Amino acid sequence: MNLINIAHAGIITDAPSVSDIGMKFFNFLLSVVGIFAIIALVLAGIFYFISSGDTQKAELAKRIMKYAVIGIAVAMGAMIAIKFTGQFFG
Image 1: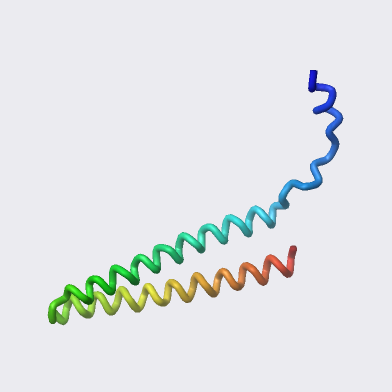
Image 2: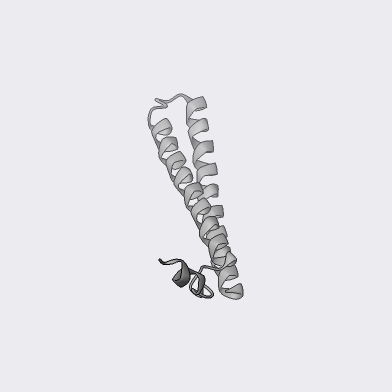
């Protein structure tokens, strides 16, 4: 039986640390935010293209585009900050 071998396995040395798991989790979340921001940017371009001279629709598309670019910048800045923090503590 393998019960004896399992009982004498010892300490797991290659298990990821809590900080590694946290870093991977935050990187995943920021990747999702970045993907949504890029989708919003593409949709804003489509809205602007189909506005057909309607200033209200064009302004809506510009606003969506502005916030999508801000979202991309915030996500990239947060990724950089998390990587530096991970290097500092890891």
